[in-house]
Image (cartoon, rainbow, N blue to C red; front, side, top):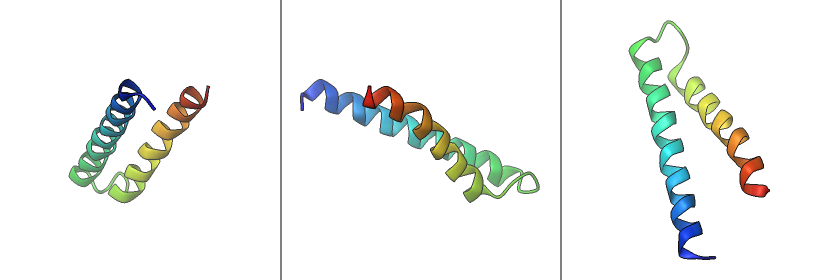
Length: 57
């Protein structure tokens, strides 16, 4: 695996982690909307469902 591919994979992991952390923070600030863990897992599943078909291709 090339260095560029590893850097792109690292970037995707970091962006996904930031997105999920942002969703968890929003849910933490407004707990009446939805549980933070549920929203975090939902966000991770959403990003994964978008990225996996692109990466597999």
